Length: 340
Image (tube, rainbow, N blue to C red; front, side):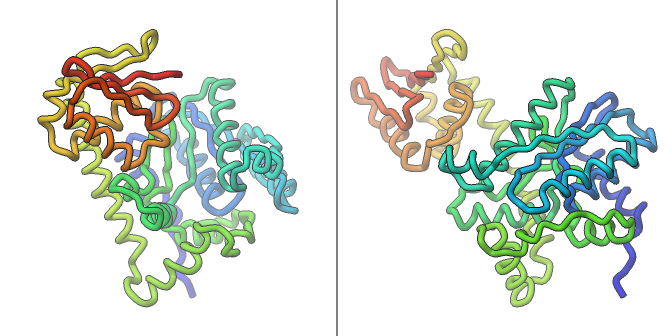
């Protein structure tokens, strides 16, 4: 017989995560992303009880996206709606033809669904003037994401996994194991909806969840989820240090910055070249992200080319890693120019 999950102990763990990572503050207004599955339903139940305890004054609203893929999509939506009505929680839903969007944009169903969900959450955030979005990622999701990134050939950043807080997104269940969540749902009779496609091994994440991790647990390390989570925490700490150090060096070597009109950043070439290769690479990514909002399309080969360009410093040189960016070496400066 499985050990009963103590509701209060799980509440205490989640509240500790909230406090440690400063996820919820007084007067926060939080959009809860709820599909109706075990993870999101557990998060909704716990945060609603936490709100009602009045330890912190905050508001919640539930957002549900009907992807119109599964036969039970409509009943999933109705289930979440009823769950909220019984607890007098505001509920907002949206039907989205994800298959159609996937075909039109020529992207996978998972990616299309994720884009539409987050777009919907942002719409509610703006319309209702809320300030945070709660996602029900858990400790297992962290390990799965790390494996996915590792198999794709990630750098150190990919081993961060999923952070408890990233901008407006908060993840109160990030330190909770999926088995704890499932037991909590059973013991509290939440009766979550089960997406049977999670057991099909068509997608990479499902293969990692259903094949790779169970194999590692059986043959190598039964505590691999906890091991990966600890690694994630270590990497996050080191990444924070590197980010702060990179920003410090950036301010020291920056000569000019205009992110609105000229859309240009100029760095001191001599001071840049005096840095270690790791810091130079970080500064390149940081500068590009400041200028155009992201570093999509900038791969290791582009960074290497930019480093060579800076090291040679022979005459005027142009390099265009993607259509939105121009880099020019001139007069002892590295000029980053946006063409957006």
